Length: 361
Image 1 (cartoon, rainbow, N blue to C red):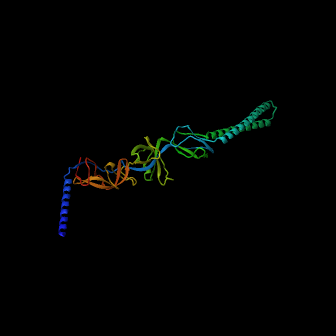
Image 2: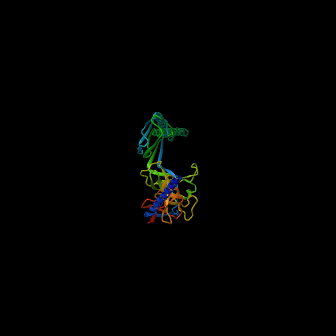
Image 3: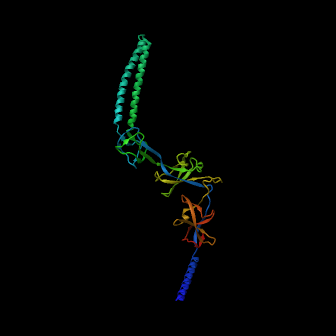
């Protein structure tokens, strides 16, 4: 019985080995897959580094008031489009109206005193010419007239101050745009300097990024850059508009602002990656060493692993696992697994697998 089982096991092993050989032979006899290859290259003049940030509105205004009072009307909602000069908030103006009445009464009193003092001064001028009044009396009338004139001017300035405060009881939009934040509601108490609304103009957007101290010296105003929005799979062009020369309060990073040339469909708050070009002139700095970039479409994924097919000396496809870095547009940085100037398969006319015969176009 044992001999029979042993013989059966040997026979099964031989059959499996035979099948395996037949399959291997079948694979080897398959027609070669036509492939297109490309060669890796290192970045020289086209080297670059990337900084991350977000989009912000170039024109952003916090609307507030200079007076204290209850909000009687709030004609604004988040997301509402508004135009410059449109009424947004009204504040109780009872106190200002009372001060305006007091200022008007003071102007009337000061005007009456001024008129009397002016007439007395003119009368004493005539008396002095006819030698009917002394120099001392004329000087006293002149001083009285000048004091009345100053009192009238003070009352008028107080009226102007009240009028200026009254304008803050009806708050209008300083710019055209969209209301992006609302900090108060009708019935709340408004305080001087307290923001009530935020208005942004989304037609003019900027990308704000933080750049390290190693890279900030390579950036200049007007430099063209590429701005990538990963969430939209979109890249737009831009230019550097402002470079901060201080890292205080930003953790050793320098703030850089980039004007977006085509902001259609973009919104403030979106995260971006900005690619800054670097001209190395034969000398590579520590911060932006030469990078090996390959097309993202050439990569093969398997779970957490990323690889690429290369062509062996026997003209077969060999799957090479890679360690990748940053993704810039449609290019992926290769950190290890692929040698400089080494060829890799970009596309194929058929399905590839490890060991498949290939024919380079």
